[in-house]
Image (cartoon, rainbow, N blue to C red):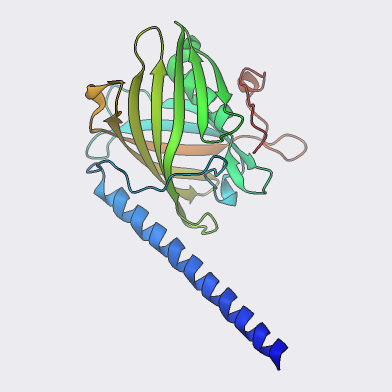
Length: 256
């Protein structure tokens, strides 16, 4: 009699845990949809939980591979900014040691950094102890330290639409006093045939303490992203672009 009762209790506990997990996923989806709609009226502190050192942003399986990214800035009405050329770079997503699909943060940061800064960017390094912290070394004895201090995403197993929201603390170190800023980026992704389409919304804030850049306070931006898959290599794995496969980035952390 005892064993059947224990089995019944265990089944009930597992069912309740599944219900709680599903409810949490629904709450995240509703929250992110509402915050997306509220842009650009975002204020700090952002209602985003702080990620642990090795807790990364997990993407749906349809992000797997290497992509060419076209990023176009939009005006307040959602139209392309006149006079601004779209930014083109690459992005790569692959399985980490836990079997989760995550962004290759060093590769991706180096790619977009080169597109924005050119030869001003020297290298990108990953903190070996914290997947959410990176260092970008720039010419002029400058170093940009970026740490994700808040994150929320929708359930990556849902296939239709995926939301990711991250708050990053950036500190620019150099000969003068460090300058601090905080940037929240919320992106809505959906599949567009073989491609991925995204609407990215962002608000920049001055940082606390030290030298804060007051010109950033409350500055909002919106971008339209299109991720187009690159050709596969003979093994069936997305091949990295030749200009970014030469080892110019430094991936210190093995947790990918």
